[in-house]
Length: 393
Image (cartoon, rainbow, N blue to C red):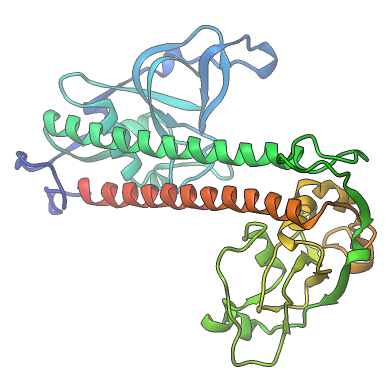
C-alpha cells in the first residue's frame, strides 16, 4: 500500500479524524521468537498451558515459553494461505518454532489491533518456498500497512475482540448441540442386538423388532440428469444427485416442489436416499440417508420407499447413527459403490409409529437448532469480514 492511497478508513468510531500513517511491523512490535521451544508429542508433559503451532493450539502442556499479550503469526505450515493464521493470545502460552511471536510496543501499538491489521493484510506475496510456504522473520518485520493513533487502535482492537468472543460463544453452542445430538444418536436406538434403547421417552416400554431394511423398503434408482440440466438455476435446485447427499442434514427442512419437466425420477414420499457411488472411502458411511418429497433424483441416487408403518425421518436418523453397518456393503477401490440389494440386507430395529415420531421429532428439533446457530455463526463471520474491509485502510 503506497502513500497515494486512502489515509482514512471507510468506517470509524466517532471522535477520530486524524489520517492513518504508514508503518512497518518492526516500528510497531518486538519479536520474541528466541523464547520459542518445540517439544515432540512424546516429550510433552500434560498440563493447562496451550501449546501453539502455526495453526493454533496443538496440545496442553506444563510450563510456558511466553507470558503476556502476544500476536502469533504462522512461520511455516499454515493451513490457509489466503486467510493466513494470525491470533491474539493473553497469558501463559507455549509456542513452538512454527509460529512467530510479536508483542506490540506499548507506546505505539495495541496487540489486538495489530492482530486484526495483520489478518487484513494479504500475507501470501511475502511467503517463500513451495509446498510448505514460509514467512521469514525479516520479511515479516518489513510488512507495512497504515495505522491510526494509539487510542483509535485500542477502540478498534476492543471492537474486534468483542466480535471474536461472540463468534466463539456461538461456535461453542454449535459444538455442544452437535455433541448432544451425537450422544442421543448413540442412546436412542438399540445397540448390539438389544431389544430396547438405552434412553427412551416416558410411556414406551415395548421391545423393538429387528428387521432387514429390504423387508420394509421398495427400491428404485434415479435416472441420469445431464450437466446442463443440473447447472440450470431452476432445475439444479429441484433435483438431487449423489453429491447433494453430503450437503444436507438427514432431514431436509425446505420443501422443494417439482414442476415442468419429464426427465429424472420423482422421489416418492416417505423415502430414504443413498449415494450409489463416491470417490471418498468413508463417504457412504458418513452420510447415508435423507428424506425428500416431490423432487427428482439423478442416476447415482438409490431410492428406498419405506412402508407406511415406518417414519422415514426416524429410519434416516437410525441408519446415520449406525452408519458403520454400511461399510461392509461398499465395493470398489478408487470409486466406491453400493447397491440396493446390499442395502436391503442391513439390519434395522423398529418400534411403534408413536415412538418413531417422537424420536424423529427430537432430532429434527436439534437439527433446526444446529442450523439456526450455524446461520448465526456464518452471519457473524461475514460481518467480521465486512468490518475488516471497512475499518482498516
